[in-house]
Length: 258
Ligand code: NDP
Ligand code: 8X3
Image (cartoon, rainbow, N blue to C red; front, side, top):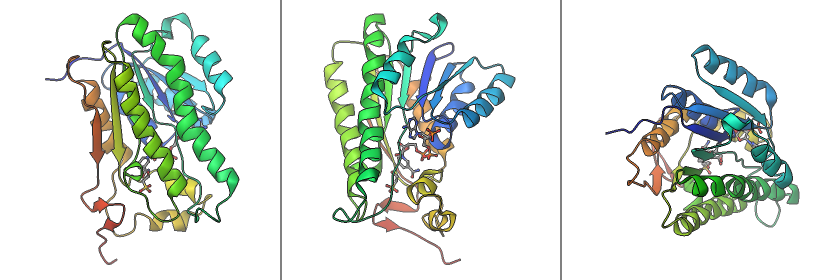
């Protein structure tokens, strides 16, 4: 049976689009209070307005997770009523390019490593001590199938997601003896702004990633995250691989002729 998370405070990083925005919408229905964080203020504000119209308590925080100091200050500087974060969804992340390891741009590597690994760590480091002190909490790390299998041109992105998997495992080990739970979720192909970002805004190239197959939606991923969050306190869903029916591995995708 699901357990209520009404009134719990949830911090979602990367809430301005895709899986993060879908988590916000799915959690709105549970009665949770939402802190939405990302770099782009406009989509955050638009989402906040949409959710507030439904009666949801929302706070937006414009934040670049790559900035360690800013992350610490943003968490420490939350209004008092928002300080006691119960649930952290470490979702902010991205891929840049699909280039061979010996040809790729250093800047793309820096961006992926700084966001997907170091950014996730900075937010975790800022939020989890409070959870431990309060004796309650749940961290959800959004990894990827790319953290389990490496594909050509994706080695650095894949390595960052393998790191997320290790960090989830390590956090669960370090939190043993506390009531704080850790869930690592590794989705396969999800149609969001992800591929548009990866290919520098090339819409045709981005669309081709999902051509002829039915990918997951952000809502599909959010649905599973809410399931994990609403299990009883003694149940920790630690590790999840979530694939579209049309995908069996990073190398096996079933596509219909169009
Ligand atoms: P989107 O591009 O739609 O969303 C990515 C989110 O991350 C945006 O809200 C973006 O907001 C935010 N973000 C990126 N960089 C930063 C930063 N430096 N600081 C704060 N926020 C940041 O893609 P998805 O929703 O698909 O991606 C969400 C997560 O899911 C990522 O970690 C991705 O790796 C993972 N994933 C995606 C899959 C897919 O197929 N789409 C599959 C498996 C995992 P803003 O630009 O406003 O900062
Ligand atoms: C995003 C899914 O397979 O494009 O993490 O890397 S994939």
